[in-house]
Image (cartoon, rainbow, N blue to C red):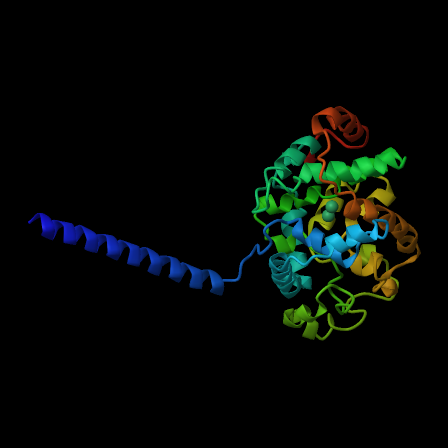
Length: 318
Ligand code: FE
Ligand code: FE
C-alpha cells in the first residue's frame, strides 16, 4: 500500500514537471512570435547606440576603443526598436497622437512632480549601472552650467527629456524615443536604419513618398510634422515660456538626420538655419555628459527649483 502511494506521488511529480516545461516552452514560442511593443531593456539604450554612431571626438582614443565593444544583445533590441519605429511612424499616426496628447488632459503637474513622476519609470535596465532619468537630466544641465552658459540653457538641459513621461501614459518606446524625422515627405536615407522604412505605408504613398511631400521647399520646420515623440510633446508643453533657442533645442534634439547629417536642408528657412546652431551646441551635452558618478540631486535641488520658478508657471498641463 505504502509502495503504491509512493509510486503515485512520484508519477504526479513527473507529470507536474512535464506540464511546467511544456507550459514554459509554449510561452517561449508565443514570446518569439508576438512583436514586442518595447524591445529595449532600457529607453537609454537608443542613446547608447547614438554614442556609437556619433562618438565623442574629445575623448581619448583608448576611451573610444573601450566604448566600441559591441553589445550584440543591445544592438539586436535597438534594431527591433527601429523596425517598429520606422514601420509605424506615419503622417496619419502623428496626426492621431497630436489630437490625443495636445489636448493636455492627462495630468496637471509642477515640473518637479513631473520629474519625480518620470523617475517612476521602471524598465529592465540595471539599477546599479544605469543612471535614472533625473540623474541624466542633471548631468546634462550641470555640464552646461559648468561651461558658463546662460541660465535658460541650463534649464533646457534639465528639462529636455521630460516629454518621456509619454511612456508612463502607456505609449510604446518607439513613439517616445529614437531619432526623429519629418513625416509627409520622403524618408531620407541619412536616417538610421533607412531600409526599415520599406514597411512604412507612407514610403509608397503618392504624395508622402515624394521629396517635398505635403511641404514647400524651405517652408520652415514649424510647418513640418516630425515623427511623434518626447521632443515635440515637451516643446508643445513649454512653448510659451522659454526663449526661442531653448525651444529649438527641445523640439529638435533627436533630429539627428538634420543636426548631424544636414539631410533636410531643403525644408529649413533662414530662421531654422540660425537657431539650429543652438541645437548643435546642445547635442554634445546631451550625448557626452554621462558620467558614472551620479550628481548630488538633494544638494542641487534648491538651485533648480529657483531656476524653474524663474521661467515656468507653478504647474503645467500634460
Ligand atoms: Fe531626448
Ligand atoms: Fe537626453
